[in-house]
Image (tube, rainbow, N blue to C red; front, side):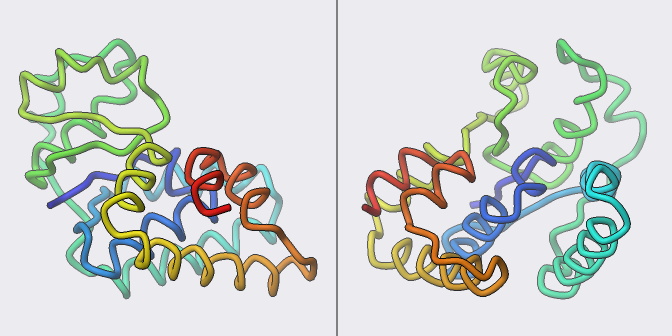
Length: 179
């Protein structure tokens, strides 16, 4: 199964690590476009030079670890699409070009289900998706979550609780399930 990851689920580090950790276990194949990665890089500018450098390094790791993930498409594909926010058409175009089945996004209002259905797509929020994977394969998700928690503890120099970390990452339902 191929999932197109919107910028808003790539940029928060813990959310990205959870999604790509699950993908790394073979649950799905992640997709994105150069424009999505570019949006992430621009958003990281709010964090200052250190944030920009970190996002650049992480984007380079994504490209190295997922060389087939970047989708390219003709501008004519994006031009024929309609969404409530025209600035999001590139996400839909990348999903279509990559033959994705789902768009993972927090931005429900700008990706109407009926419009996506016309293109054979559905949108899911990351928390609901990951919770569903946890219900189907709890051991796999627990392992990924503990790896992410260990990394968060290492990088922050503090001892995060699983539920609090997932809540901060906007993965409250998953955090509740993981305890």
